[in-house]
Image (cartoon, rainbow, N blue to C red; front, top):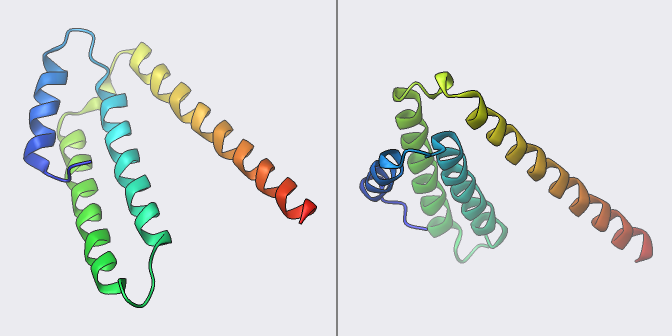
Amino acid sequence: MNLDIDEFKKRLATQTARSNANLVNFFYQEVRLAENMKAGLMEEMNEQNRDFLVEASSRIDDYMFQVKEIEKSMHLQHLPLDQKIALQDSMHDRVIEKMNELDILKKDIKSA
């Protein structure tokens, strides 16, 4: 994932040009990727790489903020119902996935 806001704007322009573009999901996926990247980096933190990872985390936060500000400026709350439903379905699927992961962890802990 590239944390270049100009590159994101180019991809957004391409996505917007499509007649069937689901912009809500586009923004949601971009932020989710950045959050996952940050979480992965933070899991690897130790004394040797702390400064580097704190700086990287800060850059990821800045990128997510910029993406969210672009989303706000586009007033996407007025999207068609099908796009809103698609976003809700995506979030619902993600919650179920995380719940399944927790169930697996519980089973692993009990068997240990």
